[in-house]
Structure formats: structure tokens, C-alpha cells
Length: 324
Image 1 (cartoon, rainbow, N blue to C red):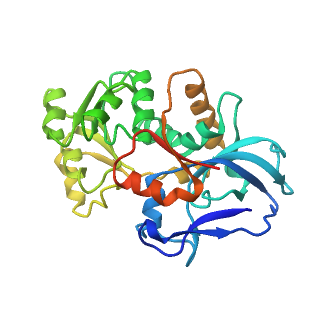
Image 2: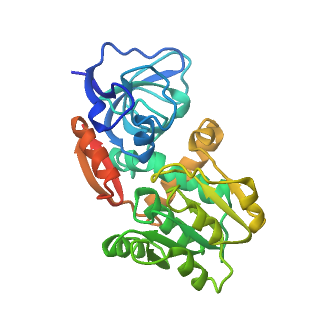
Image 3: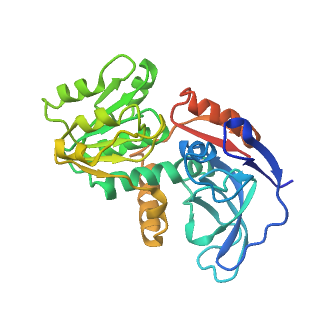
């Protein structure tokens, strides 16, 4: 039976329910994918709870990255065929056994990239790609602050940044998560549950601050993230796991003549040339061992609500996927 896990309305994990899918036929420029694995991300939770706009009134199928096999191809599709192994990232629609999707968002997977791996890196890995190459081009010798260092994005970022030659400072909660981040490229990891990360960052940078700070936490960290950044430095806000930072004023940037950006992956992924280039670069670094991805939690598709609870409860590390 073809089915999906959908949120009946904005709310907690209890709003997620199983719905049956009817016949799915790809139209012009579309392909039908049978999923083999689906990724789980904080973005899914932001959308589920109503923090981000809903594109439908009810029964929103969540999920923003997946991988599987093409079962049917619509007209006007070039370069993709039935039987191809593919991956993609696109807001909503992935928590399903099957989906019809615009072929422009789909990329072929090399043999070295399994469906499980693809489902854990299409959103997270491409997020790191635009963060460190496009939003701010990290270079050799840069000092970088990256929050949630033990999460799926954070573990990829630590390794990729270290390969560039940056000095990477991460934050994580608890001894085990700090140790995990330290083993994945971070030069220094600050346990925010016991240490003031702002003070420690300033100590580690001789009072100057970092060249660029990446903050996906939001309300709990952003004020101190800004203060941890050097004069003329760059702050990249790309998430809000602790809620939106509502106290920001433009004049806050004047304290250090800072640059601030709030980029979104899907604005990058909508550019086919960028998607192909960034995906190729991502597949290269995970295939040659530059970046090792840890899939530390697996849940059956029907248990996605439990997966959401684990993620929001901060009991996960690395990547979490749904299996089919």
C-alpha cells in the first residue's frame, strides 16, 4: 500500500497521521520516486508546528529530503530514466512511500552513495555546501563558530571546514556530544550547558572574535553569537531550534560593523546549475572520505512522530533517517 505520514494541522507530533495515497502519475517534467530512505530535519518540525507557512490547509506531508528509485518518468524529462537511483531536497512531501516530484530537483546518485546516505545528506550536506562556499566563502586560516556541532549539519560542517583549513569552534550540549564533535573536525568544542560560550570564544580568539559564526539555534544563542564575532565579521543565521530570535535590531550590527545573512537552501537548490555543482562536490567529499556521515538513529516511516520527539528532545546525534 502506498501511504504517507501527514500533519493534520499545525501542532505537536501528535498531529501526524497515516494517510493512503492513490494513483501517482508524473506529469510533464516530473518523475515518480519509490522512496528507500527519507531524512529527518528540524525544518520538518518548524513546518509541522506552524513556525513556517503551510502550503495546504490540512494533511501536509512533511519531509524535505529523500532518496529512492525512479518508477515512472513524465514527458519532457531529460537525463533521468526508470530505474535510476536518485536523491533530492525539497520542502515537504518526503514522508511517503512514493512521491511525484519536479525532475529539476532530482539528481542521480553515484554508486558510492547509498540511499540511506543520500537521505541523510541531500538537505544537510547541501546546507553545509551553501553555508561555507556561498553564504560566506570560508578560507584557510579563518576562525569559525558553529553551533549544534553534534547534529547532522554540524558533524558534516566540522569535517568539511577542517579540510578547508579553518580553525573550527563548535558548541554542543553535554560531554558525549562534545566528544563526538571533537572527533569530527572541531578544534575546540564548548559545552554550552556548563560554559559561557561567548566568553570561551573570545578567549580562544585572543579577544577578537571569529571571522564567521553559523547559528541555527536562534533565540537562546543569537545575541551572544553576534558578540562572539569579530569586527567586520559575518553572522549566518540559518535556523531557530530554540525559537526565533525576536530581540534583534538593525542597530545591533553597528556594534561591530557586522554582516548578517539569513539564507535558505531552497533558494539555492532551485538553481539547477548550482544544484548539480554542489551535489557533485558533496558526493565527492563523502565518497573520498573527506566527510564521514554518521546515521545514528533509524525509525520506520510510520514512527516519524517518535523521531520528531527524539530530535526536539535533543536525544539524537548525527543524522536520523526514516526507513521503508
